[in-house]
Amino acid sequence: MRNSRIIPVALILIIVAIAIAALVSLARTVFFSGGTSQTVSQTDVSTDALLNTAINHSVTMTVRGAIVANEEFRSYKITVTPTTRTLTTYSGYLNTPIDQISVSNNTPAYEQFVYALDRANLVKGTELTGANNDTRGICADGKVYEFGVIKDGKSVKTLWTSSCKESKGSLDANVGNLAAMFIDQIPKGVELINKIVL
Image (cartoon, rainbow, N blue to C red; front, side):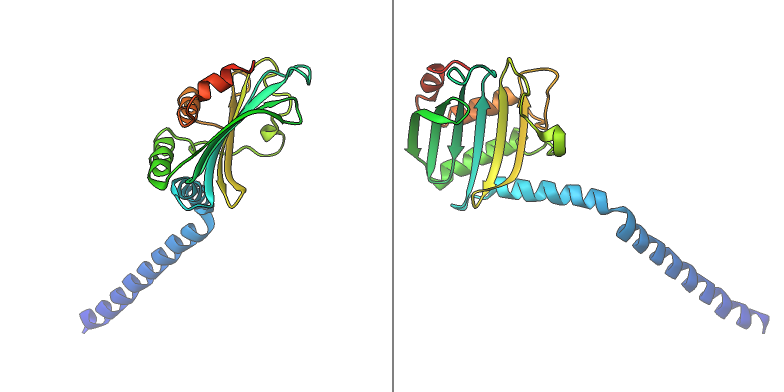
């Protein structure tokens, strides 16, 4: 008789304990995992955009030289899309074009390139915000490198670094490898870049 009363009470206690554990687990998921899931989500978004070979996607590299007189300031930009590869060199802070090479591209070639960039950790870094992401005046006697993943003409993710040790920036990858990969996309690109003094 006593056993027949204990069994239902024990069963109810077990059910209550399971329900409490489930509620605690749910509360932790909702209230305490927001930061992690947001970081993972942002990484996934930028990786997806990088690897997407649709015509409205592209990748860019911009390299700025030392901060000198306007007449002597030089920079260049490489833009690669599924249909084109373009290198433009510039003079002055208003980006007056000096030379340009533009050649066609195709989707399989673009796909190989962006997958190589992904393996080289192009989007691994975390974008900086506010003053930390302001590259004005950064590395005045060196070079600043900026890499962008673009969709519909708008930046999905932009990371930068410089040749100055005190200005590492947001890029968490080997800048030399990435820069060489971009330059290799442009036939005679090295010759064009060597014409300008950065």
